[in-house]
Amino acid sequence: MKIEANTQSINLMNKMELMKLQAGNEIAGNPLGTHQAVSFNQTMKMMISDVNQQQLKANGMMSAVDSGRSDDLVGAMVMAKKAQLSFSVLMQVRNKLMTGFDNIMRIPL
Image (cartoon, rainbow, N blue to C red; front, side, top):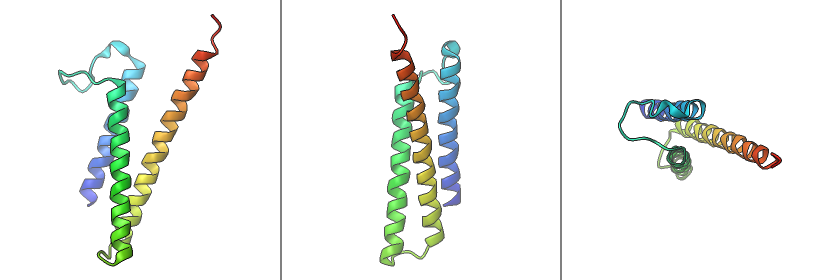
């Protein structure tokens, strides 16, 4: 479980780094070195999907503990906290995007 959680956090960090590089340097292409370009839209969809999967896994683990099928309360609590943190990061990204959009809309023509 610890390896899987580390892999998920590494994947999330890689996606965030990709978004950072794409936002900072439009002509950088694909910083991962693969031949397929990744758009911001695709990156956001992947992040939302990952956060959703973390939420579902945390809910499943909590349900298993509640019903007595599992005794890994600590693992369930850690997974729930990770899902909460991932969702919080996603909301912060959304808030930054909305602030940027509002600023663009306020530019006089």
